[in-house]
Image (cartoon, rainbow, N blue to C red):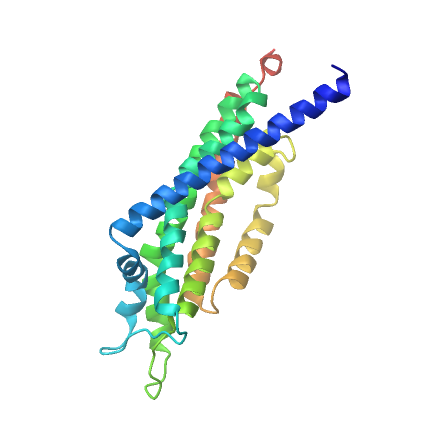
Length: 251
């Protein structure tokens, strides 16, 4: 077998392995979705997601559906989104299993903790947004609504808002992972990251102003954790760097 043919066969085997991992990840999401359909069900899942909004509405007010199929489609989307979040550790594990065979032993010591921490941090970001941010944001916004306006949010607009906020907080909580990767790959040093701390703080508030509603509560709720998580990354990155050094780097 020629070198070119061997390289082509290796490339095809990698594509087959990638396909298998994607199929397994999709099966994990499908299983989580089916479980949520069985219990508690799409309607209850949406009610859970809508609870912070409903709690902030005036007495007697409810959310509305302006689309014909919205009462059916929106709960389905919410259930699928929650299934993806619940299956995220399994999805990241499949990613790790795909890249692991090509890694050295010291690199594997970095990847697996990052896969686990990435999953947990993303879920923690979504939970932080749901349990601590939504209620305060909706209450803050509701206090500014004139008494002449009937506050009846549309469920599709609410879903878009919730998804964007959850993704923003989920990815924000990945800041320590990004810092660890940048330091371990030698792209930037810890000393340089500490020097640009003030710029990072300003950038955090700019990002928060862009991705969150134009209210102080949600902007602070995103920017402050981002800054704190950046500091956490500065603390954790040197530890990961020492733990995952190659044997020749210890010499």
